[in-house]
Length: 458
Ligand code: ARG
Image 1 (cartoon, helix red, strand yellow):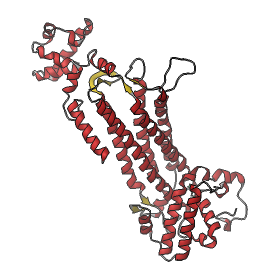
Image 2 (image 1 turned 90 degrees about the vertical axis):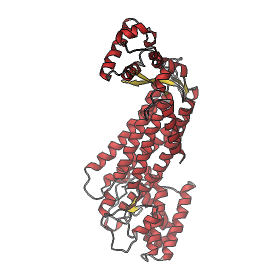
Image 3 (image 1 turned 45 degrees about the horizontal axis):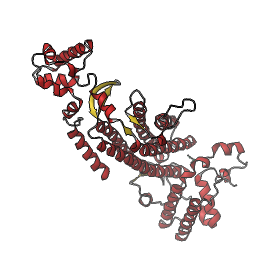
Image 4 (image 1 turned 180 degrees about the vertical axis):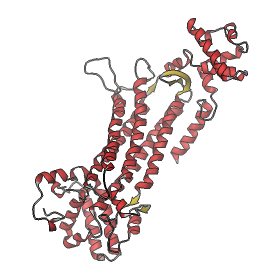
């Protein structure tokens, strides 16, 4: 097959070079965007009189036909045609002859590939955003169901203070909300039209870039042609967003793994969402959660890969930039699968409420409540902390829980302690008292729930 650049060349490209430089094998998924971009470009060329209206229409019709062939699986992609752009342009010329050869007027593959990738990332941001939202809704439903379930909250992996399970679940909803916001913010910088930069310098032909931007739904046009073809920040930004998102998923996955252990016994999953061991018959593993946790490494890898590809590149386009696609595609696929699977799995989680609330009440989880009780009696917090610490030590030495101390024992530590202290020693009451804004009391959590429901239904 004759190359796009055959005029200046006398020798055939070596097979090994063809195989090494091709990108069609992994970028086929860009076809839809490549064709959409070409249709807009051809329409603009016809409107500007750069090519005839007739040629423009012929090109647009043939491109639509090609899209239909690809969609139905009839189209044969050829590796000797290097990339998606050449595959489609070649099919076009084959269909309509010389008119097809006019499509690449005032365009280069450098601005074309930037365009395709921006259109792709834009579409995938939309998909990912709605998958996150779907999962957030499942989490909010879970929080609603467990509005009264108390569990221990942890710091340093040590039981810290009682909290509501719903509060814990809504913490993740907040994290995923930021993920969605980040993606939406990135979209502003993705949704900029690079086309019309041509190879790097722009063109002497009278193109209308604003019109193309309008046709393709771009908010703005890249202002500098050099930057337009050199920039992959939008991809890096997307990968950063994806990395933060998968980090959140991974933290949640880690908690699920932990909570499903016999030692915690906070949750259980049905057989359909777990896997067994080939040697230990008693085992039921949370491989799904472990894989989500594991895949975080892969998405971070994609981010580092693209950052590293770009770090040494002089302006403008360099072939290194072809290496942008694999990491972006892989990150897209990975976060989408992880979101889908966790979204399906989450409603099947059975929370062991009694176990959670027993652990929340045991030991000294309400010690901070005692300290705050003393503060309300007029004792400076530092002293209240010290006194409560001594009470806990006394309990430890006497193998008692806080609630097992009698009033006389309490009074030895502070005469200000009265019989009303006992109501602060119970996990439910402790939680109920955390009425500060954003705190774990049912009143606050209900407010958070309402707010989040509102956001998710909008
Ligand atoms: N396959 C190339 C890429 O992905 C397309 C642009 C090719 N441009 C060029 N001058 N060889 O970046």
